[in-house]
Image (tube, rainbow, N blue to C red; front, side, top):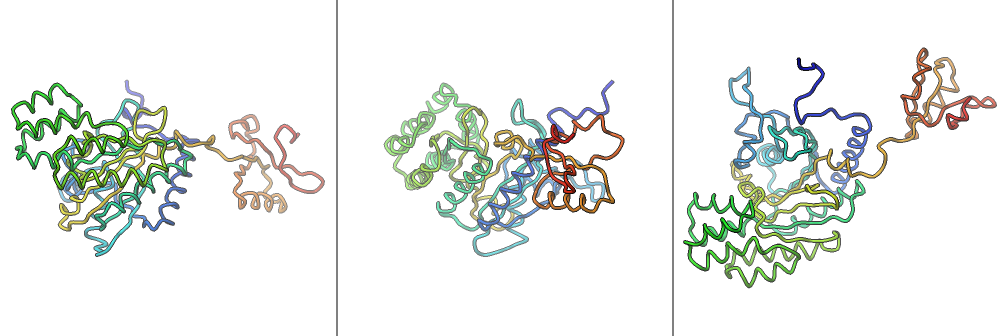
Amino acid sequence: MTQKWLLPEYIDDILPAEAWRIDQLRTAILELFTVSGYELVMPPLVEYLESLLTGSGHDLGLRTFKLVDQLSGRTLGLRADITPQASRIDAHLLNRQGITRLCYSGSVVHTLPTGILKTREALQIGAEIYGHAGVESDVEIQLLMLRALAVAGVKNVHLDLGHVAIFRSLIQWAGIDGESEAELFRVLQAKDVAALNALTASLDKDVGNALCALPELYGGIEVLQEARTRLPDLPELRGCLDTLDFLAAQLSKDVLEICVDLAELRGYHYHSGAVFEAYVPGQTEAIARGGRYDEIGKAFGRARPATGFSIDLRDLASLAQGDGYRKRIMAPYKLDDVGLQAAIQALREAGNIVIVDLPGHEDNRDEFGCQDELVLRDGRWIVVPRAQAQ
């Protein structure tokens, strides 16, 4: 018999210490976004399915929970990503002509976990820039991501850079049909070099060589110079490599290492330009990721260039420095003691955690985790270590 208190697989409660760390990080990062000119939006957790998936590609559809609306009979979805919602808000509710900077924080729900130790309910926080197509906004958004990680004390970031338009430009240049494109995309995603060689054997030699070069164009920023010699000299490709060169030059001083991967096609049906992921030592999964997605606004009927990133606050909280709690002080239960009540109020206003010891639970005081106690000494209420309170 299933225990009634058990949760679904890969769905977890967030207990006090972790919840405190997450909330502190959320507050601090949103403050960083605010002082950087980003405006907070709070989209709903549930929307009509077609709105949630518009312009986001096939992958997001597989990750989205679906249900029937009892009012309209239409299919609803629990959001699996907040970015499409922010794009809808920019395109139809704000409807500004110039640059818009938005930020958000909230739960997203996935049908399947993205990794063995991943929850299906992530706490996503992120920022987006709409209305600017230049590389300058890519630099701004990536620097903002690095500063958000720094808020949590995350250092020594390894930044991976890619550009999905490189593969797309080669496909268009060669006139490859949609079915073949999908198969090439699949083997590149899997880094299956043998299958890639087999698929390109029947293609024009220059096309085949260029596609087979992509998995090998992986490493430090010197890869970008190598790509200029191994890939066709097409204006679109030169533009992609120029963008990555500029990003690497602007960001190299803020990260431990930059890695370039020209076969990285994450979000290929969603992103349109430079993509990036941030890694930290000891972690196999990216701690933050993002990229340019200029096509998503078009799907909402108003094309707007855009770039942004997101972080899972639960992942970030696990890396954050500190033990997750401020010092806690126990105070006696004496409502009629004016001096005591004033002392409690002053301590709380100064940011201390003060817990009143309700009567009848003397044997369970240790569960509060209080290191100090508020005691009356020489007519004054003062804070002392609990060991000295007797």
